[in-house]
Amino acid sequence: MKNILLSISIILVFGCSSGETEKEQNIVEKITTSDTIFTLDSLSKTGFKKNKTYNVEKLPNADSAYFGWKKFGSDGPKDFEIRFYKSHTDAIEYGKSYADEATGEDAIITKSNATWKEGIKDRRLISTPTDGGSIGAAIGSNSSPKYADYIIYGNMIILCEGWDSDESLERCSNFISGIISNDKK
Image (cartoon, rainbow, N blue to C red):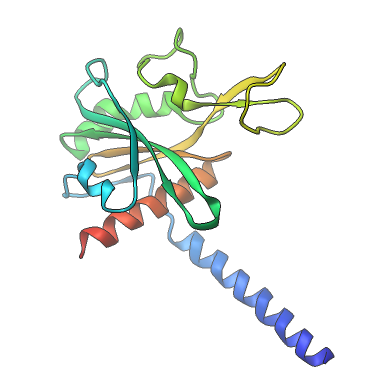
């Protein structure tokens, strides 16, 4: 019986560690060129659910922008903000600085300070000092950035929910993988 339990433990340890290595290998580069022009329809086929369409009149050269979510297995639904441009070059030239401003620990998540104010409330979480960031307005609560990082993939900028850059980039990469695999069908 001891040998069986030891064998199962070894299999579980090695099985889990190989899965982590596989995850790390699938991280998409932060800026990736693609000739494909993606649209909202490209996302809908992957299980992305659009909640809001943003007005992009004050987001230079953007074609469209959306707020929505996608389920990730046991992680449940995670939020994304997707911005579309005419080309990859436009996404970098006109959109990168706006994505930098809206993501990370120092993200600007107040309407008075943001360059692009549309959807600002969707870019923040309410966190309480004692719970490490649970959602819900409590006395003494603070706002924190929802999106720790983003990826520019072709003509898209994808802001991905996460507590840190690694978690956000992993979710962005999984999101992109879904788009690419669906695009090949």
